[in-house]
Amino acid sequence: MSTNQDEHKETTDQLVLQNPVTRYESLEAPKQHQPEPGLDKDLEPKTDRGQYSYRGTGRLEGRKALITGADSGLGAAVAIAYAREGADVALNYLPAEQEDAEWVRDAVADTGRKVVLLPGDLAEREAAVELVDQAAEALGGLDILVNNAGRQIAIEDGLEALTDEQLEDVYNVNVFSFFRVTRAALKYLPAGSSIINCTSIQAYKPSPTLLDYASTKAAINNFSKGLAEQLAPKGIRVNAVAPGPFWTPLQVSDGQPKEKLPKFGQDVGLGRAGQPTEIAPAFVFLASAESSYVVGETLNVNGGMPTP
Image 1 (cartoon, rainbow, N blue to C red):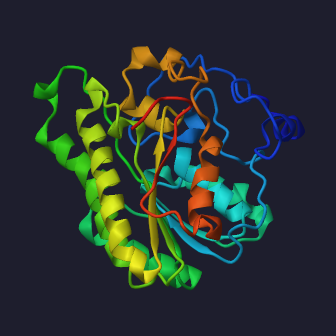
Image 2: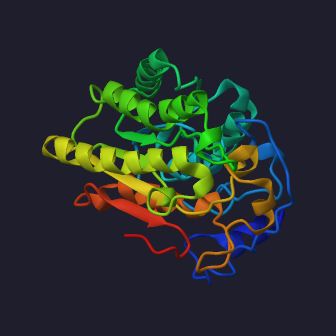
């Protein structure tokens, strides 16, 4: 991927007609490992989170968004897109990810939007309520909630090797935090607000090494559709986005078996893994008034993997 800013804009700008097969090169990622939670700054090859390629059009002007898991990968791309679309954003992340979160903040400094950094571990019950209150106070309210925080740890030795500790940790972050953060946010969300939950292709096509993770993503789908019916009469829309194989630090911090990294994402229709910025427009659409009649939808962004 080019490091030249002008060339990067020209070749990957999301508003320019281009061949999706060749918009980004197919990854030949080296085998690598990072301890959890993984950092974008140490990832090879580097990702496009939209720092140069995402061009906003004012679709979220004046909006106020809280995004969990917003320091790197997909969450970072959504944060950058939201700021470039005119929204103020509050970013939640683990304290160990501070450097990545500061990078996201600095990447959108030119927008003039407010970017609030709110570290905290959503595996802890109290953290969810504290996070929402802090975000609403800092931004002067909330009208977009993106539940994106997640844990993914591949287990190659079968169900017998999946410990209760990992199972509980994954469900705490991937499912329970969605319930807790959303419940805490409801008192702030006015009519016209949008809640967007990040699920996965794993909800439909579970990998044998990701039984716990895949089952949480199916639960998120179900939560999203049920909550959408509950909140629709109040004018609050709930939808979900289901990513396919995207190149993020999640993959190298035990999210994938190491031998799969060099060919990661090459089995989809487009023949390559997605770059984080390629999912951001889906989150923008579902947050914006353009999708005012879209409720309970799971929008699949997966490079060509058939889903129900």
